[in-house]
Length: 251
Image (tube, rainbow, N blue to C red; front, side, top):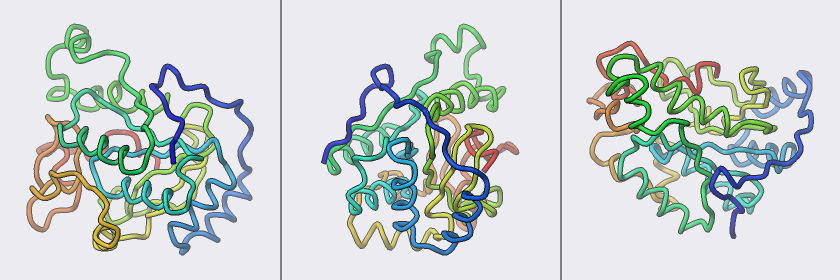
């Protein structure tokens, strides 16, 4: 299969059409709360395709599981898998993306910040992430993600309720006011053990750093290994009260 995804500058988005009213979304949320992820993905693509954006960071196994499920459902060529490349991703993250693209026969659409690292340093000072990580994330993650979701009908993300306390109430289906679309979390009810059982069952590729105590990977300066007993995202922005990059502040 081949997914017609290109560099972001070349992507032509279809004409936007209104998506769904609140009654439909609420009914879908109730109906799909306990549904299998595959059924949730099938409903999303049938209802909102081809205006479905699937975010995949290549820094955690959940996104790769979603890609594999879409491929097994023969739906991968009906969605746009995208990645936000902050310019600070791990080498292993780039390597995994290349491996996944080869295996499943698609090219992820890449969205990047407006400023490269040198331009950001010139405008805001060196290593902004050490002084104002929220501002850095706003420029390097949130703004590109907003562009990725522009004029889309649905956003599929790999959020799970067991990942951290801030994600404990993640809905399976909900309207997202921030981006004016339906946000879908097919794996919301899954656990880390279920994810890894799926990975082993289908022998799907994952980030090599998971074997080195990195259960969740973001940018290199802001990611450390997680210690025994910590939640899966404890290694992100260690030493600060920051827990999210800003993409999912409104779950």
